Structures are given as C-alpha cells and as structure tokens.
Length: 64
Image (cartoon, rainbow, N blue to C red; front, top):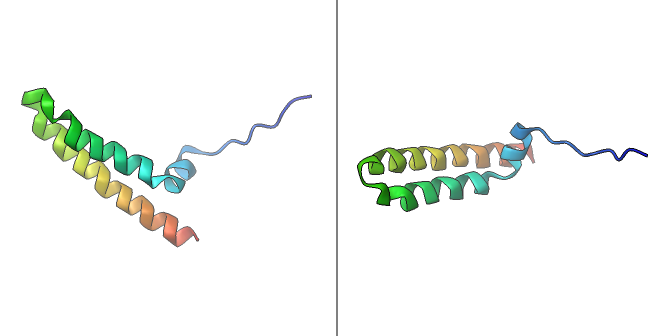
C-alpha cells in the first residue's frame, strides 16, 4: 500500500507560518552584523524580510 503524503505548497506553508519568516529576518538583521563590511546589507535585508512577514501575517488573518 502506498501512503498518501499530504503535500502543501510552499506558498500556503509560508502564509500559514509567518513567524518563521519574521524570526529569520530578525536573526539576519541582528545576528549577521558581525561580518563587518556587509553589515548594512544584512541589516537592510533582514528588515525587508521582517516587513514581508507582516504582510504574510495580514494574509493569514484575511484567510480566516
């Protein structure tokens, strides 16, 4: 017998789990500042990822 694997698309998973994206952006913004020359690049990218996670939280609230 073959088991049916419940597959979920990446888009649905990201909308259902926006906090994973938020903390990824937070750690990227705060944690990778020790790299010196690329400090601003990681900081700005982390902030943009956090802002994107707020949009995902909005989409999740509209879905309910």
